[in-house]
Structures are given as C-alpha cells and as structure tokens.
Length: 96
Image (tube, rainbow, N blue to C red; front, side, top):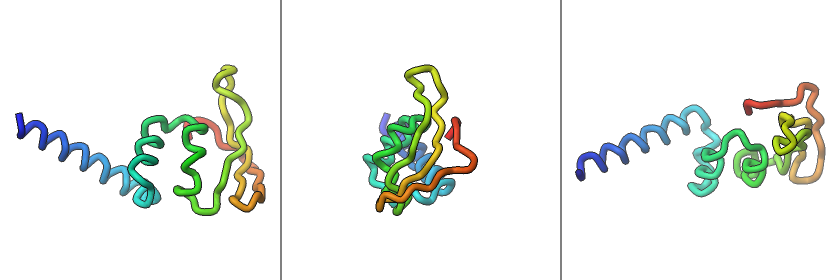
C-alpha cells in the first residue's frame, strides 16, 4: 500500500517535471496558479489572472467571441500592464 502511494507521487512528480521542460515559464509560477492553469487549459478566462506571472509585461488579452454563446473564443489583442494594446495580425483561436 505504501509502495503504491510512493509510485503515485513519483509518477506525478515526473509528469510535473515533463510539463516544466516543455513550458519553462511554468517553473516560476506558484503551485496554486499552476494548478489553476493546468486544470482548465483551454479556458482563456481561467488563464487571465495568471498572465502577469507567466509573461511579465502582459496584463490582459482581448477576446472576441464567447463559448457561452457557442462561438469559438479568439484572442485578437494583447494588452501590457501599462495599458498599451498590441492588435494581432493573425488572431489566436482554440486550441490555445
């Protein structure tokens, strides 16, 4: 029983390490933020509160469309923490 628990912890740790290797920015994110981001990776709204910790100068993203209305959300612009707006030539759509 203890051995299976240790195996589970080892497996989870290996998965976490693999995620960090693929997305190095996640290394600097708190555990709570990381769990929030990974628990709902395709939701732009769940990602918004963590943008500053992932990308230092990014404060927000402008999203057109709403999954609640059956539309595919599309990121059309990126806003800096100073309020500057960068409109994207090619909007980013799912999968993010």
